Image (cartoon, rainbow, N blue to C red; front, side, top):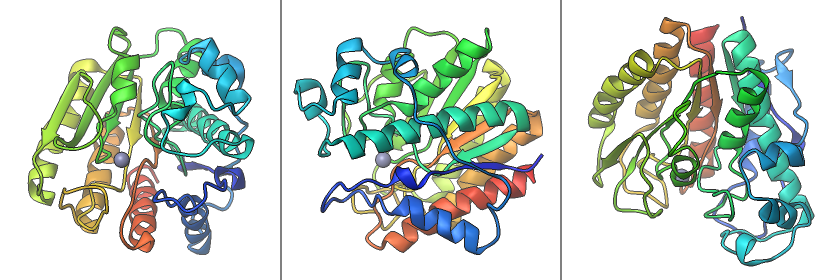
Length: 297
Ligand SMILES: [Zn+2]
């Protein structure tokens, strides 16, 4: 079955002058269209509902979000707050939910946004108001009882919010490979690989090449949710890992390929990416989509 892509023009919101290149969502989409990749296999998501948010987030925090209120719970985000911005997070979360549902039906889907893995149940953190990954997994589990999910988080930063949310949940396995000496304060995932500064393609892919098959074989997930952050890149402004664009594509091929080989559905979301040249971030995200197509057709 062809790979499904999930996208909305509403993924963009005005966040002012900010290091987060929020225009990348539209640019990635346009580049995929230009290459004739997304036509016919593109789905526009619905925003996540209050009920879906409440599967992960505390009621008081959900009300702050839905009213775009500045409170101690929302002020911990490193982003401004407005109805438009929260609307974009709800759409991105709806997109990750939809990508998970499509992956369960078709094998593979990519949300052209999402990966907000720093959001906690009761507060925002980093550039994340809603933990779309956790909400998506809980939503799938509400529909399909007994589904086991594994999160493979390859962003530069640890998936701390996600690790915290699922720490006592045996139905969700959390894996994160990230730069050690960097934001955030680390939570315990089921498996963390804390990388030293300067790690290059070879060392990274060696770690991942052992971890991904081990997770799939031992945990036997019914669904993998892959956070394909572009920020382990050697020319990223926020990090000190040294992966090349080719190395990052190799990472994507490894994750998608190991899932495909074993018949495990995989949904991907884009995650971070703060390259000095935003074109590089876009190329890395487009390559993630290409790797999905190469592996799943
Ligand atoms: Zn990141």
